[in-house]
Amino acid sequence: MRPSILLSLFPILVNGHMQLISPFALNQQDNPNAGSGKIDYNYASPLAGSGADYPCKGHLSALGGAAGAPVATWKAGSTQSFKIGGGAAHMGGSCQASLSEDKGKNFRVMKSYIGGCPVPDKAFTFTVPKEALSGQAVFAWTWFNNQGNREMYMNCASVAITDGGSGMAGSYPYIFRANIGNGCATEAGADVVFPNPGGDVENVSTKAAPPIGNCGSAGPELVKAAAMSTAKEIGVNTLADGPAGDGKAPKTILPTKAAMEASPPSKAAMEAIPPSKAAMEANPPSKAAMEASPPSKAAQAKPIAPSGTAVTTVTSPVATGSAYLPVDSVGTSTPSPAPSPEKECSCICNGYSFQFSPDEL
Image (cartoon, rainbow, N blue to C red; front, side):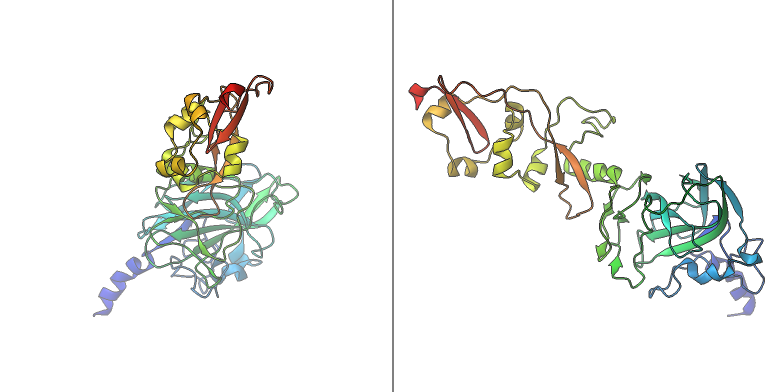
């Protein structure tokens, strides 16, 4: 192949993946501070599979010199954005926007994006933590692609923080790492759900999955949006989502048949909170369950259901095999006060509440 043809293909090779274009990344070719001898013309490539160039593709050495001077100034508490350029988005995936206050030794997550990231030239917004320390900091964009090889992309930019606070440590989770020889991997064909995404999460995924391997535990800020999206697929309603998906808390929420079959309540839970008549009509016990513990003849003649209206919230895992996505499913009505034992008595059998008088015993 002639040299002229090879040169004409060079821009395509360089832009074959995605890279941070705003703010300018350290030693990136468009960064006005980058020295001519340190420019990385392969910036769109992923991190090495061994993790040898983590973090920031090995470009933190630019800090402290002219090449590492801040390219943007952000006020703590302000809304900022980043943009990604390139031509191979691998069907998107999940991204994080993070900040390091100690020259790249530790990165704390400001916002997580589940699905739909990156999109070329789109401004992805986030809030600079009001706790962030004033002074020079390192911004990091990380991406875990949906399709293709299992990779981790990471570009970093030098920024200056003004009007800051006492620091992000303890309030914001550490950056998520996978596919770099650390025992954690992402599932192909799905948008990874970060074990600890932080308090600011944007979820547009239509197919999400937790990471695989030793990836750390879920933190206190769970991906509620991702949980609700997954719950919808199996028919579980949540208080935050509402039965109509309008974000309003419903008056009554019943677990669907699919959810009950996936995670049936224990006998102890059923005895503690008997299901209402509406719940039992929506999800009647199976024939096998009735044959295993049939109610007495007297009780069959006079079954009753509790008439209380209080709603009880119960936390149970979504049936996806994931330990990271608990969702708030709602239990059933609490029973009305027990009748006087002098006149009649009651019992619970296989999830049913029965009440009968002494002459029926």
